Image (cartoon, rainbow, N blue to C red; front, side, top):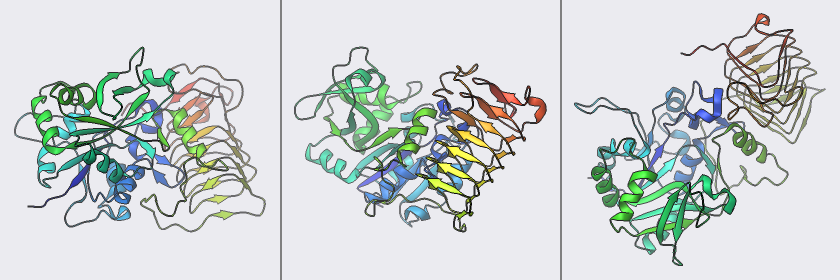
Length: 423
């Protein structure tokens, strides 16, 4: 029987509804990031850089692009005969066939997969965070403390602690108590949703709690292990870590890549971020083009001006067009004499000539103010915007639109125009 010391289970099934139209047709971990990557590249690269060569990726929501991206794991050197990367969607069983109903339920439904490697330890990861972390160092900490469960934690400002699952520890970092989003936090150590379990301990907890609706690590598995006296420790992480769960945090994380001294550096030789790359020609900048403080992907042609922006691969930016503080994803075409301010434009979008995005005053979004805010204008994938349209701030457009969809060739700030239908 194969024996692996530690395997990773990467939870990548989430819809990411707070990213609005960016995730209407694609799972959150497959959303583009930093010009050429997808969000899932970061935990996958962490695995291979940490020497973890067996990764189960649990998918559920809109998995097509994620599955295509991962393939057989070649970019991450995860195309192994034994181990490697395996995509694990929910599947038909003789009885109790079910979607994954919670983070721990997804692991429970794949006990046989984990058993096949007979691991000593199981690393649980989330597919939607941007960070670099050596899981081997965390495993060493787990072993030194003879822990049965180790939870990665990050110190957060005390006033923000009520937004997280908080761990209370003694002076040896042993977890004595924990609180889910407490009104009055007793500690500022926030759970990062990264766990190392002894497989024996986790297996027993999953089977004991299997009937809990929406079986979840934070709500069920961690309390079960704690109540049963399993030694649990908090591993403190002090590097860069960002949950890109909202449009604004996603925008910020992209913008932080282009800081003069980036807090998160994509260019470190010893900790590479791997991704699936298509064979594309180099970038082309025309004679009159201007590019300042921006990341530009391969195969992109720029005839206009780009300032402080992240531009994906295979993008075309027309003559006289000025783009500022924006994220433009792969294979999008932007016409001539356009103006884009603080826009997030998804993949395969077509924007006509003389289009202006992010113009005017900020107004609260009419349909989803909790999603479309901070003055960002968001354009969903495969959207078409005709010539001469002006769009305000906190606005959102999704689908193939025509001039008739706009009053006086404009979409005011805070408006949502969704022509994509509810497929």
